[in-house]
Length: 299
Ligand SMILES: Nc1ncnc2c1ncn2[C@@H]1O[C@H](COP(=O)(O)OP(=O)(O)O)[C@@H](O)[C@H]1O
Ligand SMILES: [Mg+2]
Image (cartoon, rainbow, N blue to C red; front, side):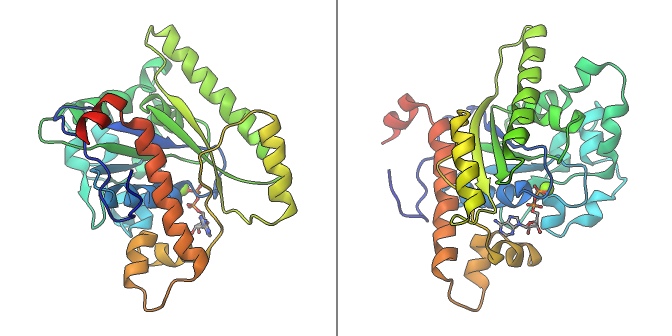
């Protein structure tokens, strides 16, 4: 497989192949979910895939805010994500924003009302249903849907997971990491059992932990890594270092890739390596998706 970062690696040849849906999920705030969602979406886009990112946070600090679209968060108009889920007449398609790097669906303050509906089991399938309907649309051709989730348990996170094929968990290493992962695992187990109760096949799979905001040479990093490994947790083959470029890019509403192309300075070694790591994360996600027979049929 090509290692040229700019080379589109693979593009599926089948028209009605369903997009892979991936949630960036953790129950802690400020661990890099939004940052990784944006930069993974940008890396996949640069690999040649069609990407839709969904800001399912219901909070004014997710992907919508990253791209400077806070006005859409407080927009009470018909075509927002809440209406797209709750209102039979509003199509999710009408909520898509064609961003400068990739398409996304902004979040909306009304999403926090989602949990107030009656009928518990049904309401956690809202996103799944509407998203599948969107992806079946002949005019829609996404390869990946990335879902940025809120930093807490609840209906939004449950909706995101139920709608996903794969889960990636950004984790900032600390003395609480193991208990965070225990609670993430418990939540995922509960949702898997809801699939079973509804006689649906369990669909989502955990792709593992992405160490986030990493300072690799610190004692806490090494200790936490050993502890998590001893508990048998799996890891994506990439970790995201703590680097100022992530904040600088966010301040300009750009992925780190677009920021790197526009900034008036040479990137340092760590920053350059980070771009490669983000591509590697994209390749990991894409390799996991590409069925062997399709891949080999195409080369
Ligand atoms: N790898 C990183 N290095 C430096 N700062 C980061 C990194 N990842 C995230 N940040 C910063 O930390 C804050 C929280 O990140 P964010 O992506 O919003 O986390 P979450 O979505 O989990 O709440 C933001 O200010 C963001 O710019
Ligand atoms: Mg966030």
